[in-house]
Image (cartoon, rainbow, N blue to C red; front, side, top):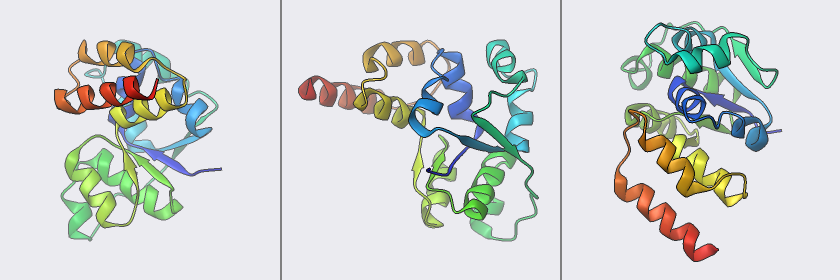
Length: 162
């Protein structure tokens, strides 16, 4: 079984577009730091996301993480990213789900493979679990930020594969 650790944003946006159920279908189990769970319960988080994750599903494991970091690559990240990266390193994770560029760069610098929300949707489309075009339409309705060219490139790739 793959060890997958997630930061806040992939969970938030997959919940917001009603595709959170892709995660256990793709990875079986996702582990998040308790800091990430707390971020997902903040009032600023969309109500749908808070409701979906209020009682964590069986496939979502929550682990406490000590946020004391001395590594300059990790220190500069926000608490959720920092905790996800530290947990990923501690668990020797196979994959880190994260959208923020700084966090992804830090994860890769530390030897972890990272994948964002768009990458998760792409992987799900490759496995015929979701219509990528529909998923991107839903994602564009949120405040998620992603270069439009990336989404268009992935859509063209999937059309050629069909």
